[in-house]
Length: 106
Image (cartoon, rainbow, N blue to C red; front, side):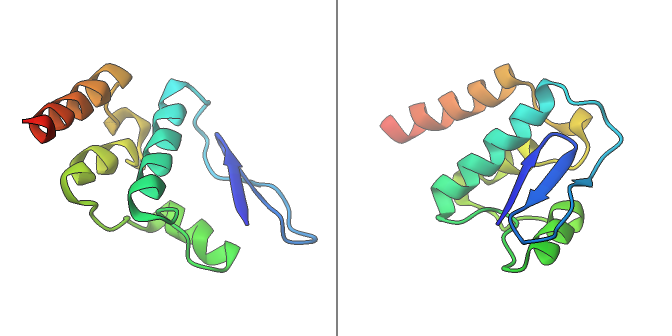
């Protein structure tokens, strides 16, 4: 199992070390990334970068791109952007999700 906090990844594997993944200081955009990963898991039923082995999952977080998730794909892609400055703001994400909800209710 791989778990993370902004800038670090921890593994439940015995003897694994905490690994620093970024030189960026944590800020609210890290929460948007977490929200994107949670949203992806809710839609697809599995984490976006789960590759079985923690080391493969770690590399997928750094280099991989999650598969598209239907209508939510563009929003999730933005939330999971590798560079924090490319992520939407919370208000932008909320507006996009609200728009999809309204389209679905019509």
